[in-house]
Amino acid sequence: MSSQQPAVTGTASDRRRWIALAIVMTAAFMDLVDVTIVNIAIPSIERDLGASFGAIQWITAGYALAFAAGLITGGRLGDIYGRKRLFLIGITGFTIASALCGFAPNEEMLVASRLLQGTAAAMMVPQVLAIVHVTFPAHERGKVFGLFGAVVGLGAVSGPLLGALLTQWNLFGLEWRPIFLINLPVGIAGLILGRKFITESRAPKALRLDLVGVALATLGLLMLIYPLTRGRELDWPLWGHVCMAASPLVFAVFVAYEKYKTRKDGSPLVELSLFKVKSFAAGIAVQLTFGVVLGIFFLVWTLYMQIGLGWSPLKAGLTGVPFSIAVSAAAGMSVQLLVPRFGRKVLQAGAVTMAAGLLIYIWEAGRYGTAIAPWQMILPLVVMGVGMGLIVAPLTDAVLSEVPREHAGSASGLINTTAQMGNALGLGLVSVVFFGTIDEERPGPGAAGRVFAEAFQHSLWWVAAVLGAIFLVMFALPARPKQHLEAGAEDDAPEPVGKSAEQVEGTQEGEPEPVLAR
Image 1 (tube, rainbow, N blue to C red):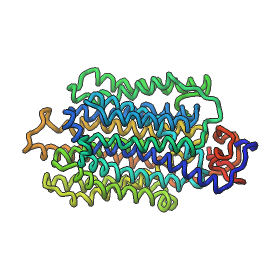
Image 2 (image 1 turned 90 degrees about the vertical axis):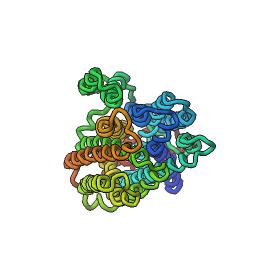
Image 3 (image 1 turned 45 degrees about the vertical axis):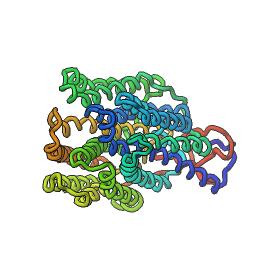
Image 4 (image 1 turned 135 degrees about the horizontal axis):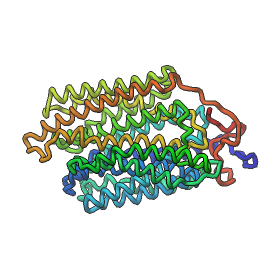
């Protein structure tokens, strides 16, 4: 940071950066809630719009796909043009898209609006971790990421419950629509406060947007996920198999081009050098497979409770509260108390614990059938929630711990991209693991519950198998958390924009700029 900039008192700096943290965390919370709140309202949307199962998948997978396809680009744009600027653009677009979703007259308009919403989120969300990364010194990031994990848990708690309440209340006769319209006041407040309190930062080196890389990455994702999502509805056409088989080739071309772009002008879309950092590469692999777990579970769980068991949105939402509380509590403890002592074993214990909860759930769903009660689901859901909480918070810190500061936006985009890629893959796989066990013609009222319960159990076996793979991949993570290194090298610090004292954040007088270990 330039020595010509005026010093900021510790109190003023501390106050402003924590306000900025609250703003970006609120945006992340809004995104998380938007995913979970939609899941609980899916059956209501299906009834109101007469949506097909394919449209149901696209309402969720379309968002995840647009989100995944744009996240790397969003992270890089933040590095180039400023993280604050991209955050504000993203939250504006997200708010507008939420309004379009809320007033959508048919399933086509809703799917299109969800695609737009996912694209806007891709501009907003990568800036959250990047802003945290460049605002807080390394020794404080563990606490901040612990808070981030708690926000994830809180989003998981409030999303289903809020969605259930808003759908059940049928405010102003709008049925499911308030689940999107509730984003409007939150988005407007975030935009106004973000302009005032978030400090602008960008990569110190001049970068260019890699449009060819954007096109190749997006094409590869579309070729993989679109046929997977639409395949069953279209009776698995040949072109779908060809696209899925060819998608790895497109990704291979993408990697080759990124190497060329790095040699040419040093401005690739993806910093491939990040994958030389073992903790980053292993963490990305875990993020991808864990995203598959979440993508499958949450959609089939909602369909099982509301369509298979015939429960109301409120009953289904309340049933999920113990799970969400367990996630939040475990996430808050894992970073601060457990990981410093036990390291990688905490994340592996999370995978084993979550798999154990799934096995309990499979047993209960088979034993009690359609007569299963919400209280009987508490045990498996709490066990699963604890397992998830032990993974989500420390994983983010592990992935970013050794990333150079100038690539914070790109790294954040990659973290979120792989998670959303996994989520979109999981949502696409619902066609195989869930709908594949249900007849093409919907079963009659008498058989619906039994068929959906069997499809639910079949899906959970798949989820448990993926968690087993996650457990093995976690062996590639560092056994113990590595200590962040502090130094005063100015060339690695983010380039601040503006010279006023109010804009100099995260560095107290006499405190050196944090630089991550390379």
